[in-house]
Length: 79
Image: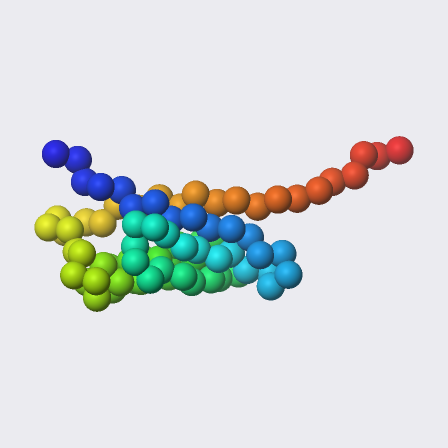
């Protein structure tokens, strides 16, 4: 049986210049970082901690997750 993959949503906060991560799959998850790479490193620590705190650790040794990122931008046409 395939493990459940936890869905993490990362949205760029232009004003704060950080990626903000939340998840409906991981109770209490709200964190931020200035790069996606740093955010993933934080998630590797936070996800198991939060799942354990919520008595929701899976029975497997690995916890697969995916980060779905969203960043809006605008560009200008060259004249």
